[in-house]
Length: 128
Image (tube, rainbow, N blue to C red; front, side):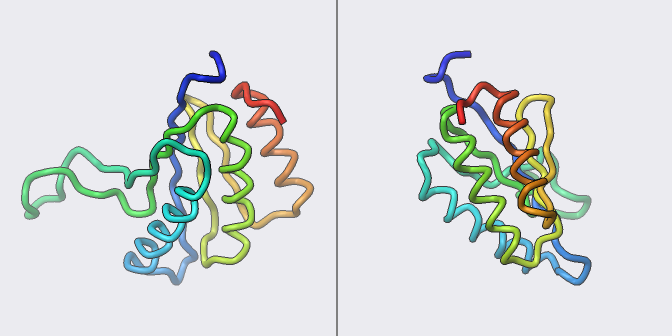
């Protein structure tokens, strides 16, 4: 894969046990705004294909879920934002998926977090 190809990164926020849906929605929108400040192509709310029973037909926004479209070089910057972002928000974890590979960032030691991020970035062809 060349550096000029784009990739889609899917993010799913997991709120603290006492977080409600409204708080998770607000956190998702805050994260979206912060990611849009980076060199990414798009940051969109992920949508599910089906509305719950009794709701109007159409797509439904998946709470706490974002799709980020970016060039491979932006991956490290996105992951660094996520790393610092979860330290200061009531979020238990952020799950990141590219293709079939996943990474879950949590409030763990900085050294452990960086090692996980470096391994994930290396696996997806972005240089450090």
